[in-house]
Image 1: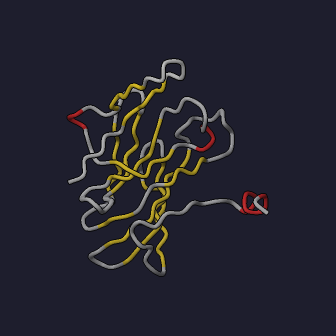
Image 2: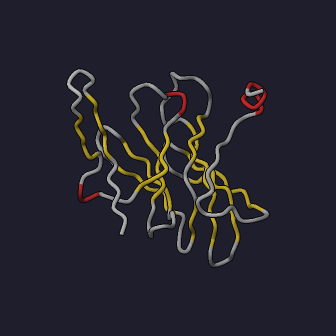
Image 3: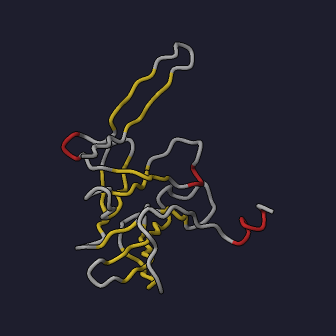
Length: 157
């Protein structure tokens, strides 16, 4: 059985010592994996992380928004017999001064009862479903990828 513990690890570069602090209380513990944060805040103190809820293992039944300072966990569950992949945070804009959770969570979801799949777009602030796009075929569980805009694609050349 899987038991993952979301933790903060601090490294003391002078002494070589490390400390570990579980972020979520024991009573709120849930198996989380494949997390991400708002890319506009990379390298800075980050308040929120969005992680796949790996339950029932190895399927992903939803995602969690974790407040990293308090350990508060808010969940978006896909529904009965509905499973998906890792969540992807897409900022509403590229302004690093906007609220850290001002954006959307994109996730592929597959319904095992109807055998239909969709891309869900969830408001990252309140975890409400904003839109659902029906997909012509299934995205396999465990698919890893990223979303980039045309400008970012051109800049890679």
